[in-house]
Length: 363
Image 1 (cartoon, rainbow, N blue to C red):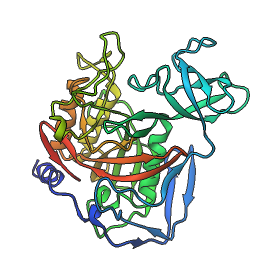
Image 2 (image 1 turned 90 degrees about the horizontal axis):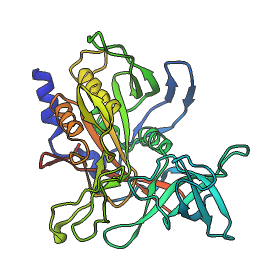
Image 3 (image 1 turned 120 degrees about the vertical axis):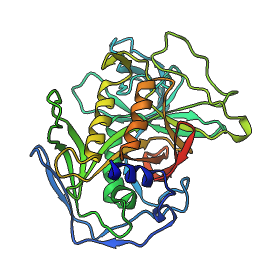
């Protein structure tokens, strides 16, 4: 208990020197492997650097991910008139005006994918039911500028892997400014917790064989009082309006955003799986599972207009409570912002402060 309390105290402390610039650290090799044998690769790297970010809004010069050639268009309808799956939309290309059938892997993206929405897409492999796949969605932020949102669930883990390998969050991950990342494992099956009914859990990454990292992607935000879109009880998502005055408003990335429809311990929740992951991270933080000594929830805030992150209690009070409980038990939460350009380059936008129960802290 003393150890958990000590970790919780460290969590709410001021941000480490990583966000203000730190010295690059060399390693001979950075390896990336899978314990399950499904994928096994090794990535050589001459340097693994800690982040040199002056503040949470400054972008890194090197893209984390580049999506390649993209095609821009506007959504006509979802579902498509050719395929009634909610994961398929009709899009009219800006270049030539051709109508194409596009995969919308994140459905309506919390109400953001609707007729008229600007999207940027990749071409799909021939032979499938869709010719394109939506990657980025363009929206106007609260200042009237265009913000591109990573609208494909695969982008979360892609970005997370590069954040780790490029060294942007080394100090926050390891909790030590003098340590380096020497090994990264992906999709690692965790030992079962002492609870007999616990099923196998696979963590997204294990760093240096001791740090367990679970990744979640945040694509939605709150709205200022005077800029919130109309909402309806039939919506599959929750529209969250900030109570901050317009002059002090700072956009918050929020997670989760859907309507509750699953059960967890008799309570209605948005995602049972997400809450189980928080519980599992808490077990690891208390050294009840395996030989791991640090548990990290890495929130990828996949849009550049957010200045902070918070759990969305409006959509799922249970998740917000479990989030707070995990923090108190020593789980470290990192909210990493990604700024997307229209050409598909995703750059590191810094580590965001996290708000919970009216409190704000940085990793």
